[in-house]
Structure formats: C-alpha cells, structure tokens
Length: 101
Image (cartoon, rainbow, N blue to C red):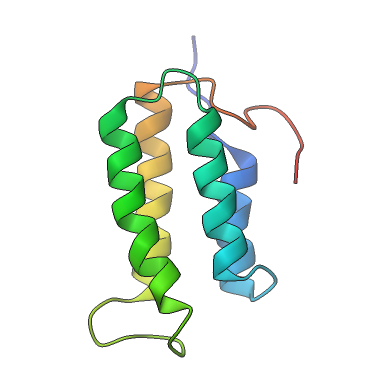
C-alpha cells in the first residue's frame, strides 16, 4: 500500500487557511480535535501530543501574531509534522480521500 502524500487534505488545508487568515485559531483547533476524536486507531500518545500542540495555539488567539514564548507559525508547522507521523501510525484518518469542511 502506497502512503498518501497528503494524509488528511482537510486538516492540511486548515493550516493553509489559518496562515492565509481565512480560518481563525478556534475553528482550526475545534476541527483538529474533532478529527483526532474520530480517527480510527489513533494511538493515545498521538492524541496527547496533539493536545499539547493545540493548547498553546489556542492561547495564541489572545495575543497578536506572536508571543514571546511560542510562534504560531512554528506551531502550525509542528501540526503538519504531527499529521504526517500520525498517518504513518494510524492510516485512514477522517477526511482521507474525502472532501469535507
């Protein structure tokens, strides 16, 4: 089986939308949490790591672009890395090959 180069187009697109300013942080966080909850076979450690990534991103919504303790852009990059790793650990996540919003 060939790995999907874009493991979850909806989640990956949400990062692009966040960067473009067309999706707010709260909507992105809700989308990622819902996807993780619906992801079949998602190892618990991946869910825990995701939550550690989403919490500061969510907190960043209270600040302007950047905080002295973390970068929203860096957190977005790390979410994409998480997505690549989780696809390898638990393929077939929500949104794979589907178009959803």
